[in-house]
Length: 370
Image: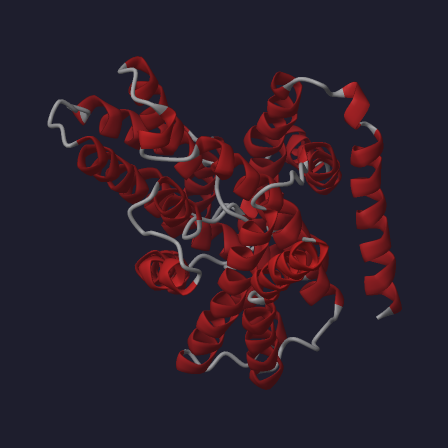
């Protein structure tokens, strides 16, 4: 436990370094540059090293299928979740949450901690699991966004066949998918990491070492907790985390997972923050509507709210994943996970209750003063 706490303390200090450097990175371009270095260099190298260290077999195919099942579970649950929080499904905020909540961004919020606490083999399995999530976020959610746009604007003028081809091409061109395909090809021919030329293996080792510090510093730089709808966002994320853990318990039970490492992996990957890909789809729709001079209040998605969700989701998921992995095997038991899930669901209604209580108190004070 002492070693785990020491690791966590170091990771937190890296986030603090990011927070202290925020005044040095004032433009979005600079932050996007750091994020691109993580997603295009550090993360692919880490995943490549991890994959090359495991034996490839057909059982790995189950991981993307399970993640895809999770994506659809959250997506299909969103109408009920929105109703529970008294939000209109067919509203800009409702549509925005429906796009963001089912998606995952494990590269920024869970992969670094899986690598640090669980090791290379679990990271390789997590990377395979993310293939299903990428397919969902890049392709399925694109169709969802276009369908929402058509329904909201009641028009048939959208001809976006080229957009789908572009998205599929971007999926193939993405660095992490290239190195995964490369690693799987090498392993299929019996080539291990040790068989690679020393120059190549050293490049991957050194760029892989950048991953954890870069991600944590980026979190410190990027986190933005704005006021306004922060209570709603925190409630939705807490509720999402609760039902996500219940989904993980179901998977652990169905597949009879007994290894503490695999149990923790099944828990933390779905707890990753919301992905930037749905935001890209929504931004494309927003640009089209802006070009067509559609009033802001009638647009399909609420882009400002989407930014708030993404900004809050990253540190929220990071804290949750770090907390679970830091606790060692404490969360490797289904009983503990069920209690935690129910606790998160219960706490998700607290911000709403506090807001209601605050309004009641304010109304009474105004009544007394009158």
